[in-house]
Each structure stands twice: as structure tokens, then as C-alpha cells.
Image (cartoon, rainbow, N blue to C red):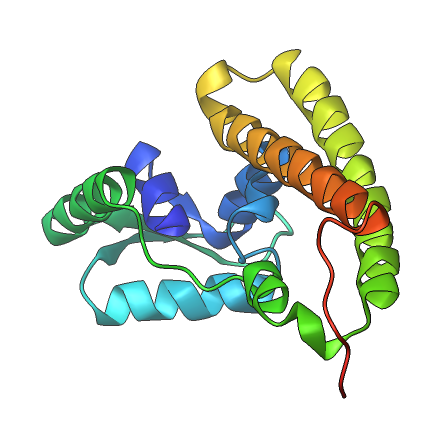
Length: 180
């Protein structure tokens, strides 16, 4: 979706796609940061008929670059993917809720210690998102920052929840008999 979205903005080559992903800070939400994964995705989009080669350029001493553009099927597929992802919550299976589901595998004090470490990581992540948002707002339109705003809200909610759970563990409001 990320690469198809970029070529829908304007025809471009793979290197430019990587540059825009980095400039727009999309690496936190799409996993195409490595050059190889970009080329693998392009190959799949080509094979599926969602993009096509527009032209191949060779400028000065630079390597040859293939410029891609979306096909009509690619534009329609992108629109369909976007409408679906925006409108229908997907069932996702993140690790953290799975770990919460099986807390009795550890002693309560072990869980509290692990969650305290998580708090430190979440606080760092929240600070980094705040800094990224402030920096990005200086040169990017808000439409390119909304996923970071969402991530910030999600990290903030998780941080609040984990703080509450740690407090409940400290006060003995959540407790169990450890048997492993």
C-alpha cells in the first residue's frame, strides 16, 4: 500500500520512494525501510498488475533508474485497501495483550518489574514521538503526521494503562498464586 500510494502521487523510482518514506517518517508504520524490501514489493506490484514501468532513466553518472506509475487496477485497488483499512477494524494479535493473558506464568513481582521496564520504554517512545511531531510539523503538512499522532495517542493510552496495572500490582489489587 505504501509504495502504491507513493506512485499514485506521481510516477517515481524506487530510490525516491525510500527517500519519501524516510522524509515523511513512514518507517514506523510500514516495513519497507530496506532497499531490498522496496524492490521485492515493486516486483509483487508489477506481477499483480498494480503498477507499470513508465520509463527507464539514466542521468549523468547515476545508475539506471526505472520509474513506476500505477495502473488503473492499481489506483482502484489502493482506494479499496484504504477504504477497508479506515472503515473496518482488523483483528490484530499483538504480543503485549497475549502476554497479559498469561500473567500467572510469572510471579507477581516479576510481572511488576517487567512492566516497570516497559514503562521506561513507553516514556522514551512518547518523548521520541513528541519530538518527531514537533520537528515534522515544521516542514510537513499535518496530513503526513496523522499516523504519528495516532501512534502517540496509542502509546499514551498504553502508558496510562501500564502505570495503573503496576500500581495495582504494588497494592496487591491484582495477585495470584504462582505455581510454575
